[in-house]
Length: 169
Image 1 (cartoon, one colour):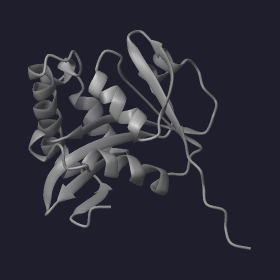
Image 2 (tube, helix red, strand yellow):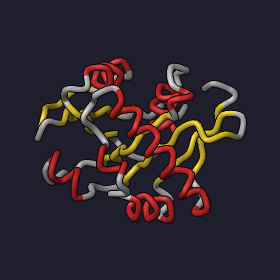
Image 3 (cartoon, rainbow, N blue to C red):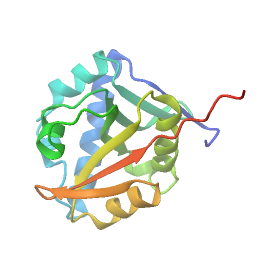
């Protein structure tokens, strides 16, 4: 991991900063003419974002004590996951709202996050979805070892099996 990055659970008093980062990223996405996350621009999920922070599901990535990125890990399916994936029973964690501040993009922070998650969680699978026509984002997940399992409602579904290291005998 880049030594100047620190990943930790978000604190409740950081809610406004995380929402601001998500909106900033959503605006950048819109400016790239990618149809994704527009609902974040009008506060469409502010309450859920705050709830996820309070439930210890949201993480922040700091670089030199500045907020560089955020992401949320759901320990079970939310409504959206059930709509996209169908009812799933496997031991999976669901990745949502992985956002890197545009000022910190192209530094490998997303790669660091995707490498950190399997080391930090206790699940057999990491699942996520993204807009199917976002070619760069789809390539990013494939490059990070995620397998495309299908497309539902215009969203690519990706998963990655977490391989635990066997304890030494």
